[in-house]
Image 1 (cartoon, rainbow, N blue to C red):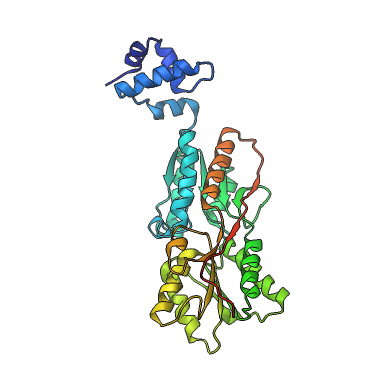
Image 2: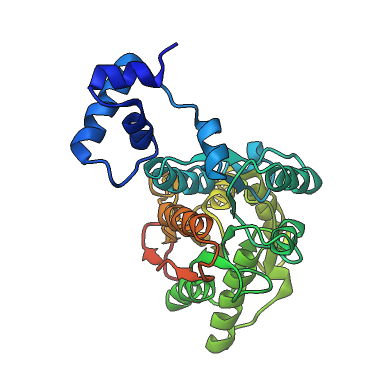
Length: 338
């Protein structure tokens, strides 16, 4: 097994200098660091991270918590993209990531408890925000560093969070349909307990109210953030005596399910139904018709949440912050005038 002494001999420095390079000590010059790291790579030397972190009282790891089981959540392109943003930052900072894998809310809660009590991670990123969430309450009670992607249900000024203005985005995208002449507009969202759904729906409601349009409970559907959720929503819409002409869908993956089911039923988008969506995942551009959608800058949400969490893990006195990522409307082919 290659040791620090072997690396020191190969690079012409002392073993203590090698240790300082591994710890990224600022007193060591960049030239020396490059020389030592080159020797480490050539010899195949890997530092004992666990031992070093034990001394530093840090794991150099963060936990990432999904809103649902990982195998379900990862079917939605939003989550791989937000994880890509997180990974880009933690890679540069030489952190690792532990992803929650619990199947139920109870299992996810127990997993977070193990992460915290077992000191497996330095901090946690929650990729959701919901009403009365046990995980959020547990992290607050234990004063454990965490960041939310979304808007906290409570203690908003005490919790660092990275979010879009989903109310504004919901209002803007609904107004786009109204501007095209649509008066019967439905809202299809995810769980009504998720703040992202609540804010987008609130924006939709406000747009209808300000335009003096009818706002029917029958036109509001909540389903899973999956393609299958969109298909189920269409079954319901087609059963209505008076169908909407415009659809505001809170997630691109749900929209794909809607497009598929409408096509099977002989309906066309945008000729029969106009559809607008959220997230601008890569599939929204290549599907036919390409989706008019709100780009929420998913990658940036992930990157900024990781930066904010690492700041908190390195400085316990880091104040809570609200980081807003601006959204952008992307106009494509899924809307027509009435």
